[in-house]
Every structure is written in C-alpha cells, then in structure tokens.
Image (tube, rainbow, N blue to C red; front, side):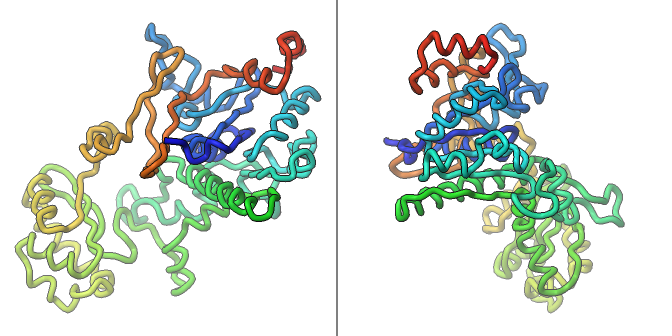
Length: 406
C-alpha cells in the first residue's frame, strides 16, 4: 500500500512537542520529514529524562522518552541557523519542500532570513506553518509559552479538578500535555487543508497557529455554557456539567466510571441497580431533571453501587448496554484486549537499543498505511545523507563540520 503523503516533503524546524507532534502525524501518513536540530544539543526533549531509552547493554542512551514519543518517521540533520551557511542550507531544503513547520519566537526566523516571505521567495508553493504560544499578533505575541501555562491561561484548569469545597479540591492540569498535542493535530489539519487548497491555486500560504487559540477552542461545551447562561463554569471533579449520571463511583473493591448518555440508558441502568422505578421519578426522568437534582440522585446511586464489586457491576452494565469501565493504569491500558487488538503498541528497529516502543497512530485506512516504520532518529543521524542529496560533496560536508555549521 502506498502512503497517502508519500509525495510530500516536510522541513521541520520545530522543537519540543506541538510542532514535532504535527510533523509526526504527517510522517505517519508517509510524508518525508527532515528534522533540523541544533548541533551538539538537538531538540530540548532529547534531554527530558529520565527515563531514557536503554542501549543494548542496558546503559542509558541520550534519547529521552519525550523525544521518542513525537519524532518517529523523521530524518535528523544538525545545522547552526545562526550561520550564513546553515541558513543557505535551509533555503535549499525549503526550495524542494512542500511544507515548513517552525515554532520559534515571533520575529526570530525573519531576522535570520528564514521567515515565510524569505522562503516563499524561493518557493511560492510552500506551506509555512508557524506554531507559537500566542500567535503572530496581539500584545503577548513575542512571549514564550508552555502547555502548563496555556492550560491555566486558557481556562482549562478552572474546570479541571475537584470542587473547592471538597478535600483535595482546586485547579489541576490535565495529566498529558493536551494543548501541545491538540495544537499539533490542528497544525496537521491546517497543513493538509493548505495543501488541498494549493492544488486549486498553485500557491502556498502562511499558517498562524497559536496554542492559546487552540485552548480557547477546547473550552467547547464549558465555554458555550457560559456564553448561553452567563454562569461561570466551576470544577466538578469527575462529574459532567451537562449529563448525569456521569462520573466515578465507588464499589466494594475500587472505582468504576459510569457514562449514562441518554434517558434510555438511565432506565436500563436503574434496572441493573434493581430500582427501575427510579427512572420514573419526576426528579430524574429526563437528563435535564437529573442535572438539576444531582444532589438528590448521587447518594441514592452511591448507596447501591458500594454494595457490589467492580466486576459485578461492569458485567451487568455491559449486558444492559450501559457504558461503564474501570479506571485503568497506564500498564493496564496496554494490556487491554481492545488496545492489543488494535495494535496501538508497536516496536520499531533502533540502531542503539535494538528496538524502541511506539504508541501507534490511531488512524486506520482501508488502502493505505498510517504508521511510520522508521524509529525516532539519533541526533544528526542523517546529516551527511541529506547534504549529499542537496549536492554537497564529501569535502564540502567536512568543511562545514570544521566550521561548526553541522
């Protein structure tokens, strides 16, 4: 099967997560991605450990888990972009590329002669995606940003965590860098849309993608709740603000998650609990009534569910078609039969470790692969190879190394 983006070349000037996550999505779809890294140091995330990938002899490599999570399918070249020679090499690569992804501070690459206008001059069909914390405009455009900061500024932490009046209540961040990753997904979507548009116009364009904009968009139902009702959303722990019952519940031997999505499921749930008449109680007959009377409903459900084990309730609820599940640890996720069947954990050959684990792309196509078979690269692993493809001779490559350009 031919990869869907086998005809696309991507020049990845980004570091850390949002930009690399975007380029990894494109690499999984078959794009040829060249990752440009700083000589000697590389992407910051290479050093974000432990844990580090182990060599075949059990010692640590220099490959941090963060880096390994977001950089498969790419080739790595080291370049000092502060040098004229490094800038010239980037321009040569951009002339042959379809896409550039970068996440430098606003104004940095234009000062180096590598901004959108500079590269579009040598390749008018180029799609140039700039990923920043706050975008190319606005009072904070020049400031750096990280996922944690944007989760706070963008309102996510105000609706995540336990209620303030409960033990342990207060704002919490999501347990994965969700804004970085969703920004990466939006980046890939924007790039694919621009590539599709290019087929009609023949022209490339500049994509201005801001993490804070992404997080504001992620407010979704909570943002709309506020805009419609004027009521400030509050943290509700695991309870859903608009749908009930939908939260964690205690059983005899641990917790389960219950996700009742409609009135029919609530009626089936009540039958499983042995209280079918509860579904006809006027306080609970519709979802809107259950949300309004959640304080009355919760203790009734808690008193019943605590009487049996998780296994009992999960089996009974599954038979009744009521969505419920256990709260899996990360190891349990990879042992989950559904996850195993979908091959979400794969291993790729690695030059130092023998193999490296990878969490697969969730995309599945009927007639195309959607997961790269190339491991995350070593720092500068492909520098000479890429330069030879650009027409540099061995002597010229050696001279660039001597001048610390590579």
